[in-house]
Image 1 (cartoon, rainbow, N blue to C red):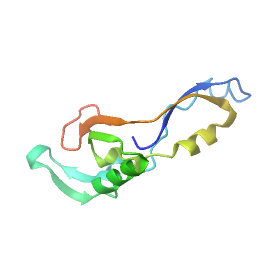
Image 2: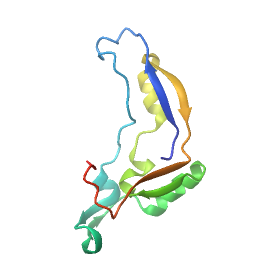
Image 3: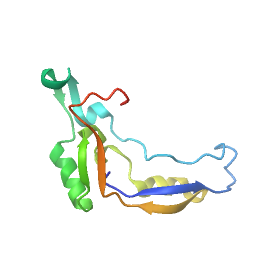
Length: 122
């Protein structure tokens, strides 16, 4: 949400067979959801914090404002840009096995809020 995204294609490369001709499909996390948002118990009005997380809502908002003011609807601090690897580092690690076809700049992000039960969240 706080960095560009890219559409990639894998390109023929000497390591292609070893990687099953697959390529990167996400940046990857550098912080667990619990480390970022803290440990919570319960849902809704009965929700209580067991221990705080490393990322505050203010930190996440500052990041998005600094990136160009991405409109954010919902989302918990467990999805903050702080929790993910930087795109440039990920692309550099894949070197000549990929080609960037398109770069996308986010203008808005919508996802379940921190106080909403999301049965699909891992």
